[in-house]
Amino acid sequence: MTLPKHRTPQGALACLALCVTLASLGTSIANVALPELARFFSVSVQGAQWIVLAYLLPLTVLVVNAGKIGDLLGRRKVLLFGLALFVFASLLCGFTPWYWALLLSRGAQGIGAAVLMALTLAVIRDIVPREKMGGAMGLIGTMSAIGTALGPSLGGFLVSVWGWRSLFFVLSPLGLLVLVLAYFYLPKDHEREKSSPAFDGLGTLFLAFTLLCYSLAMTVNRTAFGTENIAMLLLGVLALGLFIRIENKASFPLLKPELFADKQFVFNLLSNTVVASVMMSTLVVGPFYLSISLGLDEKDIGLVMASGPVMASISGVPAGMAVNRWGVKHTMLAGLGLMLLGSLSIIYFPDLFGPTGYVMALALLTPGYQMFQAANNTAVMMDTHTDQRGLIAAMLTLFRNVGLITGASVMGGIFAFSAGSAPLESLGPEAVSMGMGITFIVASSLVFICLLVAVFGIDQAIGTEALRTNKIKSNA
Image 1 (tube, rainbow, N blue to C red):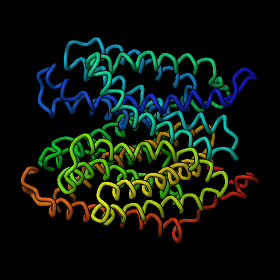
Image 2 (image 1 turned 30 degrees about the vertical axis):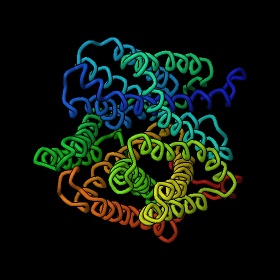
Image 3 (image 1 turned 90 degrees about the horizontal axis):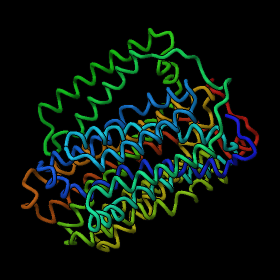
């Protein structure tokens, strides 16, 4: 990409940060309106939850495809299309009188969000000097957290004053503003940076189908992992096997098999999934513990849970600055270390200090997550050739989303099994505390494994000196 004088890196970076905020806001803003949506459309609670899933599924399933298309056609062009689609779909969501039309419109919103999430990191790598990459990644983490934190409060206000349609109408002008800014500030695509026009259509379809099966297996019928979930999971495994076979034979594969021969890259992706699963545990298990074991009402639970996104918003930029100052390796180790302390603290601090102890644990866990994300994203994107940046950035987003989905299902299942199989209303504080403790013992173990691998198993070759001297190998 080229950056004319009137298109400053600061303006382009601000646009990209707003893209991430918009996509995160689209995820979180609708949750608070689910009861009203269920009443308006006369659907069950499960039916209302599909309004959220209709957005999340394409965001997860199509993110890699969006990144690849951005590499092929030009990242600026595809990003502008994604913004336009998001704006148009938001209008449709607000005007629709039918439940199924709302689901389709939310799906279109999710496709637009997939484009935004896939290409933001790639364009950042195009325009930001490598010695400032950490700070840019930290800013993206902050803006993503702001979007997540702002959604429930903004959504609650809009629903109470103007009704559920206002949730989607407010996203349209916000998206239009970002679209206009992006048009004027994002650098134009350079012809020589566009890769071969060949497109792996069959591989694209099988990857999307694999991810769809896995996502449905992890999200449908949350109360029990039943026959439908097992069937979808097995179908996903079969589709994954076929996808791998297709990619090994394809002349222009969607995902080059040699990418996964890089142990460092595989570690970056898998650790991204693990830490996302751990963070999701606080959102899934935390409210039950705060309500039943600590006896908080809904208002106080909301205040305690809101402390996590607020801390993420505050710590994102400092985390990025830490990458610039200390290097990827030390920042990643510090982040994983804080996450380990935070996961262990959740087991003990709330019992000792009540709700304040839970917030204290989040004060360790959340900044650690931001430090890890800034370091991990910088490490991956720094090594990526320009023709693959959209794809690689999309894979980072994909593995994070898979971690969120897996954390909600698997960690929630561990909690339910540990607390006992009795109905929620009959669970006592001791049972819930035990479930909470076992869940975060598992979470702590996962983080500890990542920390051990980062220290002993994988050589983090990128440090402060490498950032200064550009002694970084290319994956091209």
